[in-house]
Length: 278
Image (cartoon, rainbow, N blue to C red; front, side):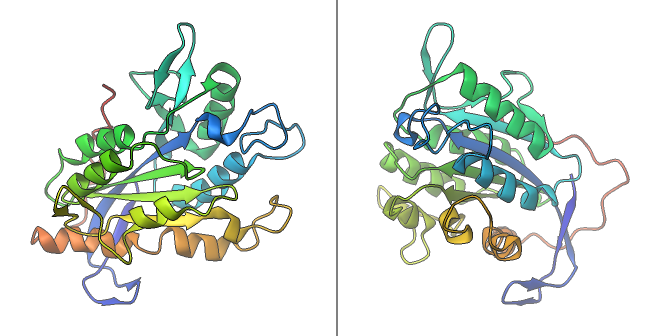
C-alpha cells in the first residue's frame, strides 16, 4: 500500500508532509434490477461491444484516481443486490472475482474484468442494501486504532436505496473508526438519499445518535461527463472532487483519537487486514 502523507497544517485541502497513513481501498458495485437489464441499451450496466457502460466508465475513471494511492494495486471488490448461481441466493456482498477467501482484484483493470464476468453470471435483483458492505469494511477498520491504516470504501450506485435506516446506523457506527466512504452516483436520478448520506448540511444520525464525524463524500458522475455520457470532461476536476474530503476526514479521526505524527514505515510493512467475508 502507498502511504498518504498528510500534515497538521491544513489550509483548505492542501497538506504539508508530516503524517504517514496506509490507505486501503475497497470497491462495491450496485447489481440491483433498478439499473436495468444489462442486455438493453437503456441499462446503466449495458454490455456494449463498442463502449463502456455508465458503471464501467465510472469505475475506470474513479478507480484510476484512487489506484494512485495504493501501491500494491490490490482491491477487494464486491457486488450487492444480485441473485447468485446456481441456487439463486440473493447476496448483498459477493466477491466480484468469485473468491470468498481472497476478494482482491489486481488493479482497476482486474476489478473491471471481474465486474464484467459477474454481469455475465449473476442476475440483477434487489433490494438495494448498503449497510452489509459498509459493516464489512468497518469490521476490518475496527482492528486498527493506532492511525497506521485508514480504510476507504468506494460505492458505485444508481442511488436507489432500500435500507436507509440501517445504512445511517452503519455510517454512525463507522464514524468512530479509521474509515471513509465515497459514493459515486451513476445515471439520471436526483440522488436526494445520497445527498442526505453525504451529511454536509445535516450530520447523519441514527436513533438519536449523531455521526462522530463526517465520513461520506457523494459525487454524481454525470457532472463530469459530456452530453453523450461517453467521455469524462475533466479527470483533474473529478479527481479533486472524489478525494476532496478524504484528507480532512482522515485528520479528523487522528485528532479525535489524539494520534500524533508517526515515523516513516519500515521497508516491508506488515500485511494489511482485509475486510472479512461473513
